[in-house]
Length: 278
Image (tube, rainbow, N blue to C red):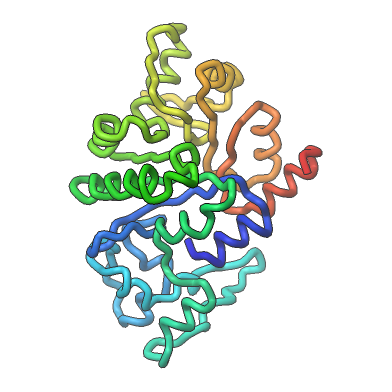
């Protein structure tokens, strides 16, 4: 979740979509972070000398920018090339981290950086409650006002695992594109299984799902061609996460998946090349 990683994905590996999790800081800024706390993402424990969880919601953007968000990155050879980039207490630490594009990044900065491209975004609101609603409000303003002229309304899909936030989005920002919630995905699968598709009134634009799911003591294969075909008949994009195996990528592409989310865009590029797409 740094510009070093984003730029590599966009310009080196030519991805079409960035998938981001968003968390709200204490001063009301949305930053890209997989987790609500950052201990596993940067050198916060080394800097502060404690293993106490450091939550994004309890700190300002400028406080977060004191940390090296490349410190925990491990490459395919097992190396951590940015671990020792800066030391705790080093003079000019924040500036050096920024120069190497390893600072925490805001969603506004991301939109600004790629506004003139055709890049699309899948964003997940990680906070619930009041902070989750504030995050939704902020996203709506960025998408429909600040970056409206760059077509963000057709480039950004919003998701959340929180029922309260999903309801808030549907009631207040029905015009924003939304990924199916857990409940909506379950309904989609079950109506397909029992042949009552006609009663499904889904309002989401994409299914963002794993390849299988467990429910009611059973394991469901979510890659069945019937699911994909039914989604496509309703103009719903089928998007699988998180796929880091090349053969599985190729299988899903052949089945008609629209999007494959991966931690390894280089591997996905290889899969596309082997299938003759590049």
